[in-house]
Length: 195
Ligand code: 0O2
Image (spheres, rainbow, N blue to C red):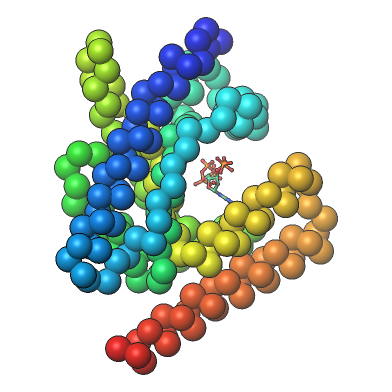
């Protein structure tokens, strides 16, 4: 059992707040230097308690293993204009020394069965607390605006249907994901031609 949820979640909130500032700082620097900005916008959240509890049941995660096995209690999302921007952001995160990458999941080259595409990086991030340093896991999702458009709507539709969408609707969503990906490809090609 978690006796005090706000105490348990507090380092995660701190990690999210700090990383939002840092990632938005990178965005600002690109803007100031007047070079193509790979970051369109950044969002962050701490997973709501009911979602944590739901995922614990779904993935059979006991309380003792929550910190190690639930990698997305703290989540950051970076939205990019182009697929190539995602590679740039990944390279940028790989070079940083204020966080340690523990896992990378490339759902762009290997999309999920649902059609979902995004690049996920799980990092270990140290937060400074009054009783010392604590490493927390943070999931950074990097995706294009088109991938985000699809994922946001698919997530809310699935939520309404409690993850039990009829097969024909799932097939249509998969097709919509492909259409979003083709849109990304077309936008990249148009950009290349303009260049
Ligand atoms: P939230 O917070 O509501 O977004 P795995 O065991 O690898 O299948 P795991 O460990 O949960 O699953 O990690 P995964 O799949 O790498 O990342 C989970 C998060 O990625 C999800 O969080 C979503 O944010 C996003 N995601 C993964 N698959 C899909 C998908 O098919 N559609 C959409 N819209 N998003 C997806 P949560 O837990 O769903 O919660």
